[in-house]
Amino acid sequence: MARATTTFTCSACGAVHTKWSGQCDACGAWNSIIEEGPLSAAAGKQSLGAARGRAITLTDLSTQDPPLPRTASGMAELDRVLGGGLVPASAVLVGGDPGIGKSTLLLQAAAQFANAGLKTFYISGEEAAAQIRMRADRLGLTGAKVQLAAETVLRDILTTLDAERPDLVIVDSIQTMWSDSVESAPGSVSQVRAAAHELTAFAKRRGSAVILVGHVTKDGQIAGPRVVEHMVDTVLYFEGERGHQFRILRAVKNRFGPADEIGVFEMTGAGLAEVSNPSALFLSERGAPAPGSAVFAGIEGTRPVLVEFQALVAPSPHSQPRRSVVGWDSGRLAMILAVLEARCGIPFTGLDVYLNVAGGMKISEPAADLAAAAALLSAREDAALPPECVVFGEISLSGALRPVVQTENRLKEAAKLGFTSAIAPAGGKPGGDGGMAVKPMADLTAFVGEVFGAG
Ligand SMILES: Nc1ncnc2c1ncn2[C@@H]1O[C@H](COP(=O)(O)OP(=O)(O)OP(=O)(O)O)[C@@H](O)[C@H]1O
Ligand SMILES: [Mg+2]
Ligand SMILES: [Zn+2]
Image 1 (cartoon, rainbow, N blue to C red):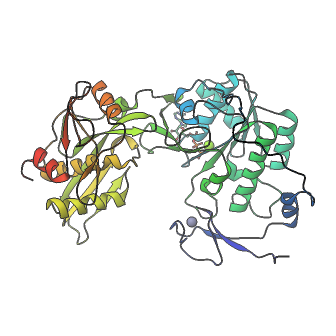
Image 2 (image 1 turned 120 degrees about the vertical axis):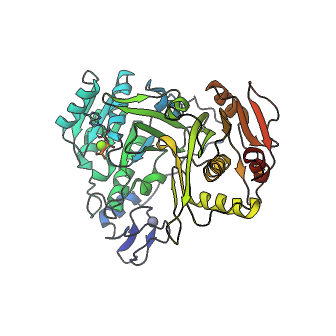
Image 3 (image 1 turned 120 degrees about the horizontal axis):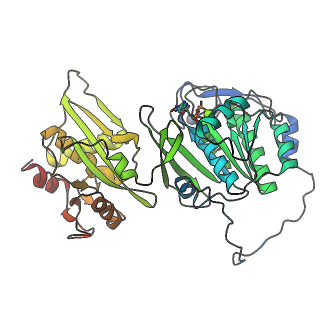
């Protein structure tokens, strides 16, 4: 029998190390590695089950199953991210920063699902029942048929769930649950995993849907939601900037629908309001065309979304100029700056560079390269881009522009919001489209010449 040893687990990504170190070499997080005791003998026995197994049943791939009986909440933004509604027996993880609005979202969702006919339980290990009722009161949900409990002992919770058989259980949060099959503190990697395992097992066993809330933590003592991502069917992240009212629910994994789908909400005093036209919201703060601004026609999941890239470029007082980026990838920014210098002869040495995606949106599409480059150039040259113009295209290391997917949808959305022209990679759709004048560009040098004169 293997000797019971302690392990060192990264609480951010779950990677297991043989010894402690200050930085996790799997995910790069600092001070995230914690020592964990061995699994208790009881847990080992439990997971192995009976010594003699039974024969399993095999089927072929052609067996016709009825379509998944999904339940829609009626919150269109949530239903779309779930892939068309909640699937029975599925486990969903909703991760997000502390205070971003997870409990608000899920209490609203709970009320909606209860109204749609699901027997819905909301179990909180974070707040007292009175606190949740106060929130319900503020959100105008006191009439909803949601069953509430403030509890952290998983065994008691599961006993109740097995007897009551709800259709939907929301657990807020997975980090506060305590499973007696593991000998470590609540919030540790092994506790969080054990609790997630037992709750997903319950979902499969009873056909209930389970939604787990997970806090994204910077504190090494509490495991982050990433350590249970592989155990659940669907992983959603609730994102947003503190100072902004926009909130984005993003599917990063979905066994029952497309990933990368987003739902957009606005945090109001009366709770989260759905935003059915996010482009209009993201562009609402945009003033007259100004240097350093470029509107990116992006695609999030199945939906086109326009966002503004803002850049500021200024002489740097530092020997090491600043490179600051919010809402986009900093590695990608470094690449664009290198390409501008090497292929177009436009250096940013000695200049501080700030790049910002307006509205607190996070963009990961490579198609945003050209919008970022356009904003940077526009800021550096102190020249505004053509008015009512959207920009998209992927930039390669050679400076060539690569065509991107769903050109037509991007143009349609731009036209809908009153834009009249687009700068896009050559080789996509040429000519006008839906009233849009499209300027195709082969490479970044052509773009610089066309938009900023000789460059
Ligand atoms: N009385 C109020 N009026 C308006 N907005 C409020 C009010 N109370 C809370 N909020 C909003 O709700 C947010 C907190 O929401 P919620 O408790 O759902 O977040 P959470 O992600 O569950 O947080 P936690 O990490 O504490 O569990 C606050 O940041 C604030 O924006
Ligand atoms: Mg909460
Ligand atoms: Zn790690």
